[in-house]
Amino acid sequence: MIASSRTGGTTEHDAVVVGAGPNGLAAAVALAGAGASVLVVEQADTPGGGCRSAAMTLPGFVHDVCSAVHPLAIASPFLRTLPLADHGLEWLQPEVVLAHPLDDGSAGVLLRDLRATGEALGDATGWERLMGPVVTRWDDVAADVLGPVLRVPRHPLTLARFGVRALAPATVAARRLLRTERGRALFSGIAAHSVSPLGRPFTTAAGLVLGGAGHAAGWPVARGGSQRIVDALVTELRRRGGALETGRSVSSIDELPAAGVVLFDTAPRQLLSIAGSRLPERYRRRLGRFRHGAGVFKVDYALSGPVPWTADACRRAGTVHVGGTMAEVAHAEAEVGRGRHPERPFVLAAQQSVVDPERAPEGCHTLWAYCHVPSGSTVDMTAAVEAQLERFAPGFADVVLARTTTTSTELEAYNPNCVGGDIAGGATDGLQLLLRPVASAHPYRTPDPGIFLCSSSTPPGGGVHGMCGFWAAQDALRVLRRG
Image (cartoon, helix red, strand yellow):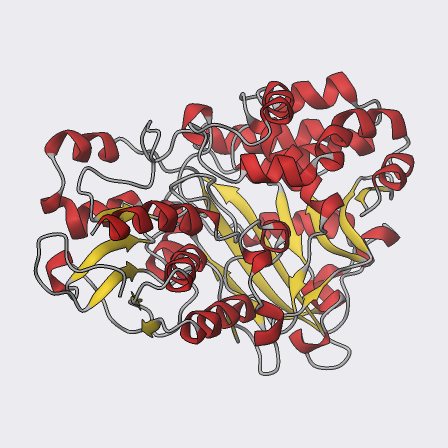
């Protein structure tokens, strides 16, 4: 053990981590690697949080329950230092990173090669002007962007250039720098991962980070399902001497074993519920003002064959953004921002079985699809989602063998961190994208020096990258080493 209890008593562990999502596990792995004794407790029977896989439709079909495609996992400055491949994790890269079909039968495509992408979009100069500065300095960008904002940057000039461009609304950046509808549609779909109306400031940031990651590292899937990422992290945790206990619900911090520090891979709401008695009223009020964003409606499909996309590029893509032109995508996201359910939603689809034969029986395929909806929605959007799919893949209904739907409220019931169906760990509009969960130079710390937040409600936010957990672990280690 690194240190005894801060109060002078004995402890069972240096650290206890509440929640076994990717960030909780990353925190635990980082702590254990530094010599801390670590216990992770998880209320579900399987670890993973928003990174699990299951048989959700028919026998032989493996579906990703939440996250499916992982550009930030393979590019993560922390995860890529771990020997996860030794524990069975294999990344599979589709031939086409991302496709965005249009009504004329063409598609905007994101390829690994920057120049080839621009040429395919009919706008090599525009795409390179937009994405080139991020792609050519990707390691420097990732080092600063995938961490807390209020710190001395490692690469200040690179970060400053990125920040100036990232501040703009995605629609403004696309119109200013891109000349073709294919390019504008492609970028708008990537930026829509911000789960915010695309006319708002900072939405360009998501497009730059995810697009840059696509060029630098790809948008891969994990062979056999996203659960394999979590399984590899659990194996590495145990190799380092850490322990995991599943099926253990925690309603009060007093139920946990004595520890030097406790880290919460939870939404702020759960932190307040479990440990609020240890936190001062002023901080509780600040944390209570944390906003959650829009929800999602999700459909998992078992298919008798591949999706019959009109555009050939879509048939070779791991991810397909289904929403039409930039104006249509922007309108759909704006409708969600107004609290409405769009008639033509922007649909984010992943077809993992294009590159992963373990996902479905021979000749069959899976499709993972979701759209954004107002927070807490109970509306069944199946018809609207499938109308969009049929629009760009006529005959899609003919290959559907089975489907399972999940509303926003059902998603929250499955994973309480997804408050109102919010998969991003909190609203990403305005300053909350940068200053989460509160404005602080040390966002992972709470006023209690033994309590930390390490979920996607802290910087750098949503995605399976483990960086929220990694940074929280660095702060926690400082406390443990002081003793």
